Image 1 (cartoon, rainbow, N blue to C red):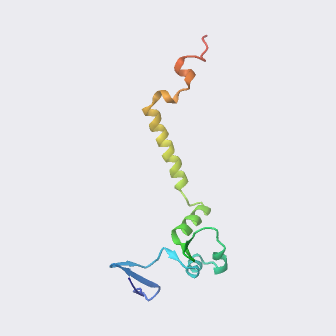
Image 2 (image 1 turned 90 degrees about the vertical axis):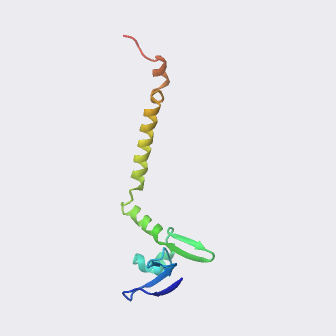
Image 3 (image 1 turned 45 degrees about the horizontal axis):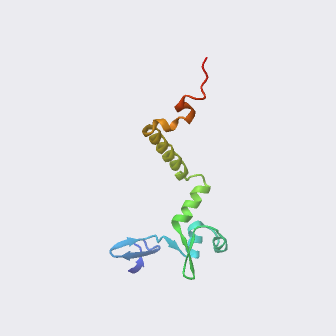
Length: 114
């Protein structure tokens, strides 16, 4: 792995096996603060988005983004899970038509004759 400046002279550019990685996933506290636009002291107090690697704390860019998406109302994974559950239920009912009825309906009990 080698390090150098990116072509625009900005941040560090990593080369790993011929693959350029301009944005590392794990950030230091200072990098996370810069990424989020928050003071380092505030980032240090965040109850989410960090992982421990030995004695070092790193901030996971994807976890930070996901948490911010959720609190901003941009997270659609919950909606996808509901849609998936609805589809699975519909498939189950189609495959097992008798399972959708109550036991009383299957035996004819509970019905009143008029």
